[in-house]
Image (cartoon, rainbow, N blue to C red; front, side, top):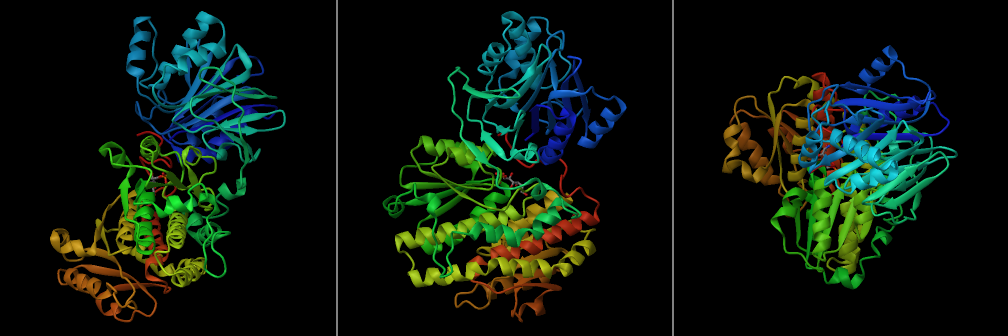
Amino acid sequence: MCGIVGYIGPKATLDVLIGGLRRLEYRGYDSAGVSVIGEDGRLETRKKAGKLANLVAEIEQHPLPASHIGIGHTRWATHGAATDGNAHPHLGGGDSKLALIHNGIIENFAELKAELLAAGTQFASETDTEVAAHLIAAAYEKSGNLEQAFASVVRRLHGAFTILIVHQDHPDVVLAARRNAPLVVGLGDGENFLGSDVAAFVEHTKRAISVGQDQIVTLRRGSVEIRTFDGAEVVPDEFTVDWDASAASRGGWSSFMAKEIADQPTAVADTLMGRLASDGSVQLSEIDGLSHDAIKSLQRIYIVACGTASYAGDIAKYAIEKWSRIPVQVELAHEFRYREPVLNEHTLVVAISQSGETADTLTATRYAAEQGAPVLAICNTQGATLARESDAVIYTHAGPEVAVASTKALTAQITAGYLLGLFLASVRGATPAAELRTIGLDLLKMPGRVAEVIKSSKNVEALGMAMSDAKSVLFLGRNVGFPVAMEGALKLKELAYIHAEGFAAGELKHGPIALIEEGQPVIVIVPSPRDADSLHPKVISNIQEIRARGAKVIAIAEEGDTQVAAYAEHVVHVPQSVSVLAAILTVIPLQVFALSLATALGRDVDQPRNLAKSVTVE
Ligand code: AGP
């Protein structure tokens, strides 16, 4: 989950590297560092534990020479604590003429390190990364050919890695390689860029190439050459980044998270655009790769994802199964992969991922592909590994999500899940077309409703501030409200660092109700009372059960629900909608609540401790 930047060209390298790292810092912020080859031909490195600001201060104290080639890194620690010594770049060889940065984990580093120690290599860090630096330097010393040395070493590395190197003897080239970790190239005019995602260089160019599995990039000012690890030439596909640098800037907001919560009407609208017609019918041309016959012969759908994305899957499950009548099972990707599920061509595996680089999710989809199951991705990052490896992709159009805690990507993922459910149902004829169109028309209104919820969120902000001394908060929900409750708990955990737990409201009596004591805050997502088979009465009973034991209840309920006020200390209303669609609305007050409470506690809401935006290691 580290941030990686590489540059060669006429610009002041340090500005390009620091600017890129600033945009990538959300990927990891335990330490940061840069290496440049100065106009004097010398390789120089500066690196510092802690956030990027610490590195900038270090460079102010110990300036770097002017340069036109360099690499930069922000770290999410895997091997070795967040110290100056473990910060990247790492230097290789006795003469320290080689600098290397790495995103991922080298799983066979121990045996390789033993080989180097036996040869007398001195190590300066506890990292797996430094092993690669010394191996390449040693191979280069032997062969005299840097590109051959680089290729020979990356072929020996197991695990997940994106690696960039510069060498003092070759101030005209940056070498890069990737296996099971992201790497993109930015194409400029007389300059070229490398990054772990396009945010690294989008302010300089929108022309990009996604580097494929087991490929090596030779980056020069005027050329980009891509080859496989075995040396075969690769003809890359260029794409154009569909957002600009301002979209990834904070734009005056107090935090990226606040900005991205406010972006949700647009994120939902943009994800619907071109897919949901004004008559409520759905067109999903992106999945033409799945024939109607194949869709009609589907026997099961597995949705695989992690964290917040898995809750989007849980919500989508209710909709897809209800409308298409295909059995849907949602599994955490890291559990799905290793239980060896029975899959075949009649099982559709839907992978949901904002980054498209989550190692657990990629491992699950690769397993599914090996078993012959078609894989459909719901992804927010163009050209991401997941998108490129899937049979079909439904891109969410939430724009770049910089805050580590996912908000607008989630509501966009839920939207995409609803679109998929409506599409599958219409192909299979499992629900009358007129009914599907009615639901589609209701879905069309969601961007406006989302805007209404956000506009009326001041009361929720006040609640978050008022409850900043809470030691724990419980969240309850039923049906689609249950995954919303789970997501609300996750948001509070990852932002405020306090205990929070989501429960199925019906499960409370089977144990968790023992947690309820006088003053225990409980947030309850209340279903609409309007449906004939509404679960509203049951949830009201659940509320009474916990209030009888001292709970303080905050109810998230739909406008017009006049009953719930009698059973709650606070009621937060959201606009009415088709019940199963309500999740897009009811999750937003929980996002605002978590942001407000965490802010009151002085937390860093964009870069919470211990977290990273994209978990690219298993
Ligand atoms: C959500 O707030 C977290 N940042 C985390 O749970 C995230 O959703 C999860 O790691 C999955 O990431 P992905 O969507 O990029 O695959």
